[in-house]
Image (cartoon, rainbow, N blue to C red; front, side, top):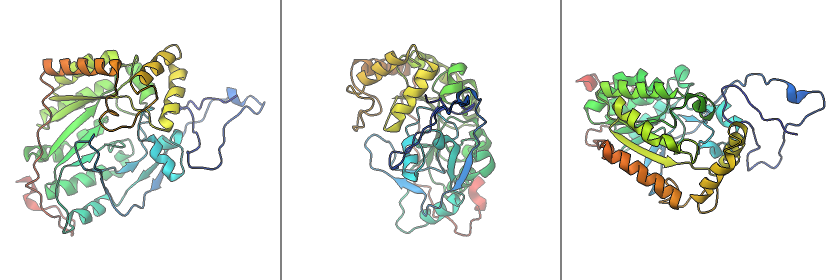
Length: 358
């Protein structure tokens, strides 16, 4: 019998071996009551990422940007649905508990970014931050990597978009406010549910739902364009909240709304099902059936143009509902287009220019 690894403040309840590893292991009862013993708190391990570049490029037709930055690999927020979990397998680590407790950080991110932006062949286009793992996850409070990246982008007047579910972004309002005045930044807050009980297990170390709405209000008050991302929409679990989330975000000042249907690539499918059967056993089969109904009979369909929104009658219904609430609240017009004409090559000496606050 295998015991679920239910750690307080962690999302996954297992730590399955990464898919590329030749050996596997699992916890079993040794006959001495080990299944009845409370688990000790699982501490976060910080690992230095020695990558030699920072900007990631893509040509996906599903994404509105062609380049992104991820200051961290792995995410302490512990969201069980996170589509980035399988990337930890490339490091020989588990997409389960390892993903949220063994985090790679890039302490040289600002230096690497400065060097890449200074290259002769670099052409400016909006950078997206937070597309894979959250740049404002808890470790950012100690390491300030995102803050350093923002300082470089502010100095060079480089456009960027940010997506996060953390209130820590409020720390950087001083930088973001000036960049917003120059038409260089937009922010999107991810709000999955307004149910605090569900959020506590679904995304255990992320900001509480109400706190995210407060963050939207503070960013809006500072003049920073803010949108809300209702993601993921989980069939029969949080889909009934879509309209209320959009209304609450609109009341807080958000000017745009988007959504993504739950994605379960590779190991995420098993991890999510484990979580679902642990916390919502009576709903589990119904939720999983609706997911397959929206993914061509499978847990996930990675095909371009449909992986974000799904297919079939249920997916179409979700889309129609979202379009209606977006139109009613005038939140379907998108965020402002970012300027690229103000970009200037960075000063490799590392000092912010005096005319930044002009």
